[in-house]
Length: 458
Ligand SMILES: [Zn+2]
Image (cartoon, rainbow, N blue to C red; front, side, top):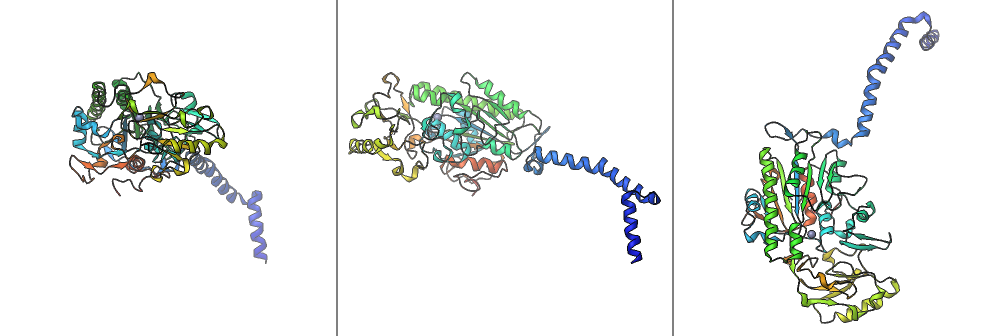
């Protein structure tokens, strides 16, 4: 009992600073001072680091590659040549692209998602989601919940985060501690899930090949800690001439030469930096192109009262959206009658064939009419007769003329079994690109519609 009391006194003495026990006091001060000087700053710095950087950054593995002067992490350069139809390669006027494929692989074709137009598909390529899931269901559409129009040619409207669902690759990379550099890709100017690409150039039609190549190279020349591992760039020339002059025109062939030269510029830039076997390059397109058949422009005016619907959505297809829900059934029945024995077909949104994965969004018009390749469905009110394009796309994504490209080269593609001639693997749909890139960059993919593990390796 006495010993216990002494023990308590001793401890009280320590805590109250009893001068009779200076030895203990010095020890306590020493411990406190050490804590303040060393341990506390370490805890504070650690906390700041954890708050400032996502955990993946702290876990980043060592760089995998060395080009003779610098270390490199696994890197992907994704290039889109808008409207590059799969069979354009057979014209044999793109020698640099052909040489690129000889050293790498190509998919027999890359099938677009439906509808086979630019904005939905560019955003599908970087999210792995069907348009009904990422929300960019057309180049132009109306959202009845937001009560607002998405108009792709109006950046100040389309930039708003409210339009952009899913998680594009540049966001996945940044969230997981990597850096991204994106030039002109659909969606890359917007804040998505709270993130932007680390480095970004907005769409600019006056950029030259030299500009685009030097944008990419300037990112690759950054120090390791600042250098993006996901880089994307874009050229619109082939699509532009496909519309303006048609897929079989001299102008289109000149546009093919343009993107072939851009490919050459990018590959030269990589070779000069000794990065040919370090940077994975993937060349894709969003859709193909079909010759428009002017005699097959169908006006739907006789089927219903055009003043009862909003502007037609989804050219050359026809998304029909009545102002009043109470008019949907009548207009639907009128269009069903009009399409009887015709090569085009109209569906209520919930009847659209399942293989299109194009139902699950109110941004899809409640009635959707789909014409055969080369046809146009429209109304006199909505169609400008002076602007009949020579080429169109947007049709059934199973149609061969709507097929795009997937060409790739670099270390990640070395061990893939080429199943067919000319280094080709079987064709696949463009929802696969997201997981292919995520695997190469060692990123945990966000939820998407692609094959787990990336179709090339699974
Ligand atoms: Zn396009």
